[in-house]
Length: 261
Image 1 (spheres, helix red, strand yellow):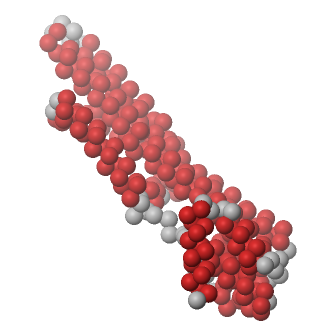
Image 2 (image 1 turned 180 degrees about the horizontal axis):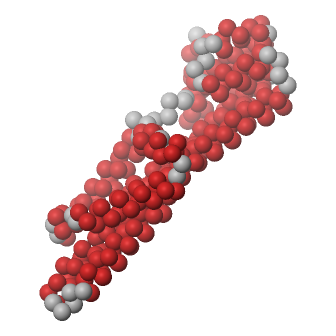
Image 3 (image 1 turned 90 degrees about the vertical axis):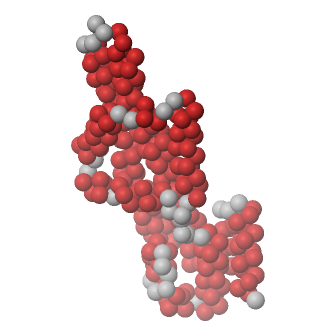
């Protein structure tokens, strides 16, 4: 689990709830018609503006926000160095039995192309196109959250306008103005809460995860091309370390040392 995402949800909602409790009662901020307008309106607008296949993955997107990335840069680089060493000693065809045990489809595809003798430019082009496809798919799926972030405050304002209309109808009774105004403003609160605590942060988190995945795959491409060209494993390792920060780079060194032992 991604602890930062869980902690973020707890802190954001916790302090909002604390602010409400310190200044009043939680029941003051509960209004069923307002909830119906914001949630129902936003959900309907999302369905109207999105493709069916994107809507189906919305629960998967929520899961991904709270899921820690399994890919490990240290392990990937250590594997690339090991494969480069074996290829230098035994030739590229010696890696054929290794391919079947590679769990990552992206790495597996690259290794298969290397063993098949594909040109470096062909390998780079095909793998780069795969990265582009990943980015576009993630962007399309993430658009549901972006739509929700844009429309939730709008439906909150619609609910407020509805509440103001109802309030203006009862201006003859000044005692109802305060309570009616409070109810009218609650829908704006719901819309802002939904956009800024749910949709927008989730979208940004998924965007960051996509950028991290793309960066990692670009590193993998460089490593695979180095293996194909017969580059010295130590040179490959130094090239891969340039993609990492100092802490992660030191972990690669330790991992390589342990494998040699």
